Amino acid sequence: MESPIKQIALPLSLDRQFSFENYISDRAELIQTSIKALVVGNGEVQIGLWGASASGKTHLLNASAELARRSGVQLQIYDAAQLLQCDASAFEGFANCDVLAVDNLDAIAGNPEWEACFYQVINRCRDGEFRFLFAMSVKPDELATSLDDFQSRLQWGLMLQLPDSSELEIREILRKRARLNGIVLTDDVISYLMTHYARNLSAQMEILRRLDGASLSQQRKVTIPLVKQALLEHNL
Image 1 (cartoon, rainbow, N blue to C red):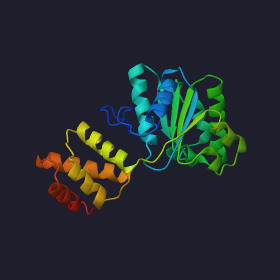
Image 2: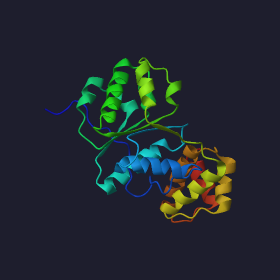
Image 3: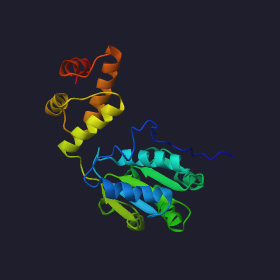
Image 4: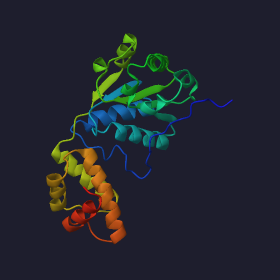
């Protein structure tokens, strides 16, 4: 009989949009080395990532999934915010895997059934059934949990804080992401974007997506006039 819960996959990319190579941070080497070692099975068995919105949590989970795919490692990835729509008891029967990855794990805080479920998930991880990688917006001791032991178990493994991207890092990320799409962003275009629009990574990534579409449809290079035209059409 098919399990009532199905795998809820994050939007994985196989075109290098989410890779360790294009993750930029002043702590990138430590973060990447630790996660890669978990994925291939020669490092920590439990790693938690925490950081603000657009700090790279989902990026790193998707990069881990791509590394697992290339390495022949069975990785299952879920979004805890979506899991809340399911019965926690059904999750006990999820398929066997080498690595269990969960984004937005803080979404289950305050839900006794799901906290108890992941309490057992961590126990199973520590017993060697699989390796566990998860991401949250805050560190575990700031969660308002119903089950104190759940909060403490989240801290059994390595916890890595993802720093917010600086303006210089956002500029470099924009340049690299654009290059992967075959777009050249000049310094003056990047400066225009950083001056006239929100200086956070998620907002700039959305703008880049719109510019990519405009550049392709009009067969034009991305210049400041094209930026103005494309973003005006989207009321940005």
